[in-house]
Image (tube, rainbow, N blue to C red; front, side, top):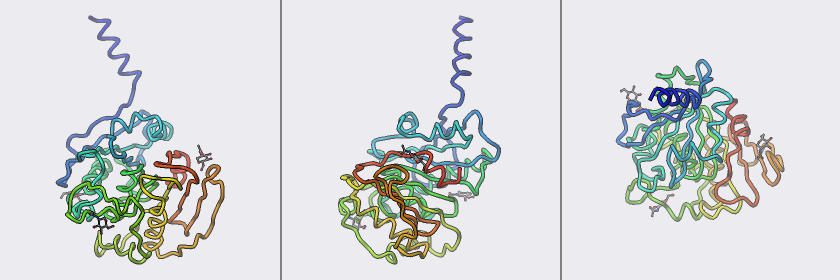
Length: 291
Ligand SMILES: *[C@@H]1O[C@H](CO)[C@@H](O)[C@H](O)[C@H]1NC(C)=O
Ligand SMILES: *[C@@H]1O[C@H](CO)[C@@H](O)[C@H](O)[C@H]1NC(C)=O
Ligand SMILES: *[C@@H]1O[C@H](CO)[C@@H](O)[C@H](O)[C@H]1NC(C)=O
């Protein structure tokens, strides 16, 4: 009995920090998105926060334990906190199609995630000026939506294989609906139009906006590569910079990838020959975040 008990204690101690659910995170939204958090054993004082958004058919737990998703390692190495929201929707895609989620404090998933950020800032004395968002696929779409709907909370975004904010609209107002026209790359607009889509999600907002790093693969057959160009148009439009890159680096950060900078707030990384979705590069995203 005693030895079982001691083994239990030792096992717990050896395992250290783990992914933990926060059941009551003062969620003001109607969305029932769940909050999970990982506070590493070596958490730094006034820690930065990274919000890691999973893809469809995934969850906070399975994304956290997926060894291709590097953010637990980053957290362990550098002492920042990671928040792992989990989608409440059937199929577990994030809601990037309803008016609620596509609006500032609109009651949808985006507001629930904003509530998680506020909870973590307060509860763990995290640094409000170093809140970052990343995600793949549906998580990348939500990264764009969060940047558009709750820009006041976020400093920088690094997203892998998404679509512009407001591209996956549901004509019937449905929650977490798939949109074939957008996924197929047929929704195209000018930078000015895409900018307006963003502005309309938080009317009257004039504060700072997160800088955006956008990754996409050239042979993505789930979210057509045209969505890369449209996303770049959207954020260059918002930042009021030219859609002609100010610097282009071939084979950066790796062979076959091209990095294009549009001023200092928008960066695109286009991965030649890569499908859906582009694997996360922890180092490159951390550099973008300044971590
Ligand atoms: C939630 O409600 C609290 C209390 O009214 C408010 O301070 C906070 O800004 C709200 N946050 C979000 C994300 O809705
Ligand atoms: C798909 O999204 C576009 C906006 O990008 C919207 O106009 C269209 O109605 C949506 N399609 C459906 C079936 O909801
Ligand atoms: C990730 O990016 C870093 C720095 O930007 C680069 O040095 C590294 O080679 C990249 N990793 C992979 C697997 O390409």
